[in-house]
Length: 140
Image (tube, rainbow, N blue to C red; front, top):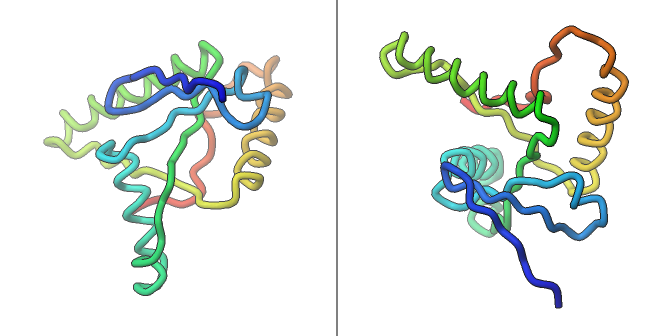
């Protein structure tokens, strides 16, 4: 049995470079732990979308988010964090920022990520900004 590798990041995020498939070493994800703001929001939104009976019998095992690999994506992510903090200061503590999430089978999510990665590869020579990922469902 192979050992598990976890790297602690800020805000309770865990960089998890190991996964079930071989491509994970080049495509790490961040494991969101309970108590992390994003984990709690996603859990609440997901369970609130289910019937009361189903929500009470549902157990969320793990929540992962894609970690940006390229230095430019990391820079965009950091710039967005700084911008969000600036907007919060400007608006008296409310940055007016909403989290987005998508629930689906692992294969569905991997397909979405694969399609987006391919689009990013196709856009390498394009100098325009395309943001970071896609928001598929906004939490209120």
